[in-house]
Image 1 (cartoon, one colour):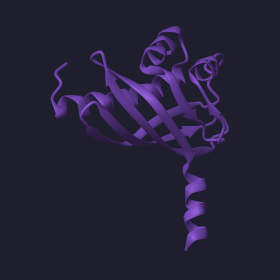
Image 2 (image 1 turned 60 degrees about the vertical axis):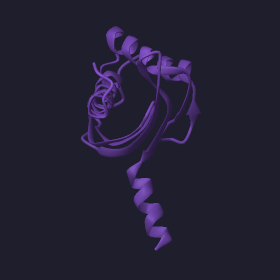
Image 3 (image 1 turned 90 degrees about the vertical axis):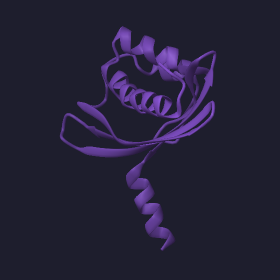
Image 4 (image 1 turned 120 degrees about the horizontal axis):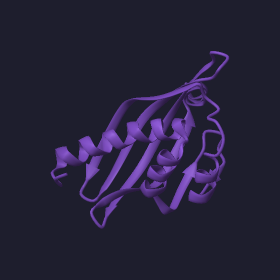
Length: 136
């Protein structure tokens, strides 16, 4: 992989889509890939507003996914040298058919030739819609 801006942007878009698939799969290979991608010092804010580190996040992948499906859309990557911010919407469907949408914001840093996720903010889009309505 090159280090041109378009190469890095495409790579980071791909990573964002893959992360959602890995989080859904929860098998040994998926967990290994997430473990390699997450910074040891990652700060992850879950949609339920709890904040966890890498160990808690990885440990939370044990057992089946709470969702029947999980997919990423609207991935946008802003690249600034060895730093990048991505936003995406993750749509989940539970076994009962209920659907939720989550805004994911991830801060990446490149070190030693690879990208790591340092911060990951996850928010329920429904909460954001309600908040925006309160402001108007």
